[in-house]
Length: 166
Image (tube, rainbow, N blue to C red; front, top):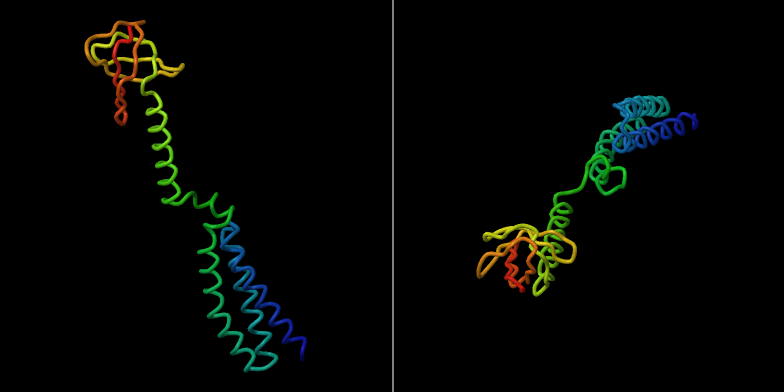
């Protein structure tokens, strides 16, 4: 008779494990069905051993099964597999975007007082090259011809202002 008890408990534990795996492994519901079949079989074995054990197994399954599944679903985004399924959180995306903006702002601020060349006629806006990189810019204090040397005199957000360096 003890074997019915051990088989029943084992089947309940197997059902619980399969329910948790269902949250992590995309099986199309096969693991969930297996978990339900295992849990029902475990409860039947527990009832055959003793009705008190059967009722206890039924209660534990009714409470722990959904709790385990919900807990697994909540843990899923923090696992490597879950991050590939769910994707990045809004906070991670916002942090990356903010870091990229800060990097761009710092890069543009380093252009201040640098010299470059006007790649297009600047009447008053055009394209310049500074340190091998192209930038849109606005000429201050007159027009700048193509090929003329320019100096960056002001950087304000996305706006780069230059003057003729010659």
